[in-house]
Image (cartoon, rainbow, N blue to C red; front, side, top):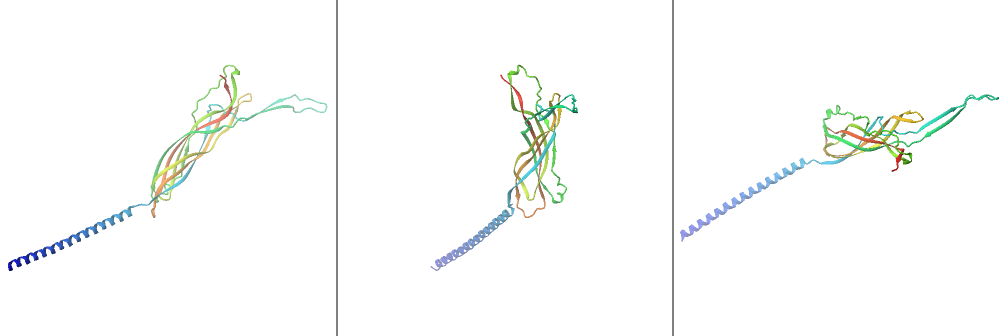
Amino acid sequence: EKEEIAIESKKESEETEQAKDNKVIGLEKEEVANESEKKSEETESKRESIDLGSKIETSVHSMVVKTPFSIISEVSSFKVFPKINVKNQDAFVFRNEKYAEGRELDSKLLTTVQQYHSEAYCKLVSLNLHEKRMLVELYNQKVKGNNEENKVETSSWIPIHSIILESGNEGEVNNYITARLPVEIGKYKGEISLREKVVFTEKVIGIKEVEQEIILTKTEFLVPQVKKNGQNKFKIEKGSLLVEGYIYQCIEYISEQSTFHDNVYQLVQNIVLELIIQIIQEQEVQVRIT
């Protein structure tokens, strides 16, 4: 019996030692788990801090830019010659008569004829706009050398109409009626080259959109020279075509909300604008009746 009691006590002591060992192992596992959780939390907090530091606050702004242009040059080719208001005066000189009371020093019969025509006007037929845009970042030390003025270059007007040769009316006069209709005097193409720099005060990281429109403020056909072509007929040999306007642009850009920046941001635009202008005048024309 004593041996059995000793064996049982020995077993109990072994079980107690094993339970103690299991508790110690469990505590060690809990400590390892807690340490891993702490490390993961520290890693997450570091990632969050890195993400917060790497986030850049941006905003969208807009700017309106108006770029004026003007083109004027001589035009001497016409599809139909324009007509202008003319004043003609004929004088018939009489022989000076003598009277008992005196004599005539000068005696004339004057006839004045004045013709009125509608003024020629201009119409924009079409336009082509070619652009090259560059967003440039300039260092502050080099800004002085890059602040050039905008450049504008214009070409002369090129006639693109076909010439109509004047010819007599065929057939009887009774087959035609006279009507006042808009007549194309000519059609001309001109080209304007622009180099424009738009300076931003913010730190610009991109151009979102550019809306633009061509606005003509003045179109005029000027007649500086008139030639008399016998029998009181006047013929316009040449004139000048004047077109003025501007390019309206609404520029949307993305800027970075930084505290300070030492650089200058510019939008450099190379623009080529092609205009086709039609000169129209209301004239009397012979319309054939068929």
